[in-house]
Image 1 (tube, rainbow, N blue to C red):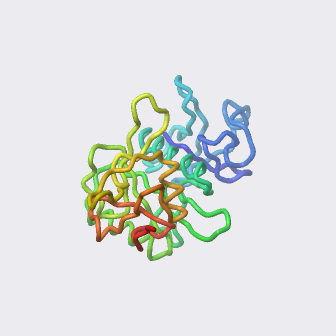
Image 2: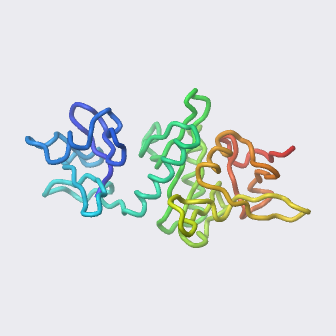
Length: 241
């Protein structure tokens, strides 16, 4: 299962976007005759559009495809990336999906950029197990190319939380969208307390480098396991009045 493909005429198309990212409808690639000219941008094998019984839209490799990393993406990983992209859009940023670095050494899950082009932050959905050293190395690769990153998981207590700019998300009971569960803190009477915030609100603070009422954006070396990013430059300073 994959959620992007390359159309021979329109370029990269995304199953989660109502206009596929190119001003076209889903019906323009789904069950068309002749089949839409779609290929995988990883292995170049032909692909086709499909819709699950539950209405989830995706792309699948045609029979005979080689083993391809794109086709192995889990639904959970895709859905978390989709939430990150929508949260970035709600926070006023421009959001793309699966954009490689300059030399192909890394690929950003959701690159969020200022519409004016002043900053770029990679929003990374991390569900698979990874060590602190591994996630730090991936963060450093992006930083070397001028891209800061914030890492997200909706799994219970990721062991790397706080090693890099990162927060844990969860879906509150009865709510449609994810919210910050760990990683966003405020100082109150010389103690730290968790601050509830929607994903979009958190991202708006992170992108703007500012905080909500009474809230402090903490540096990693000050609060090791209570991270938050600010202004597209995670952990570069402490914001406060």
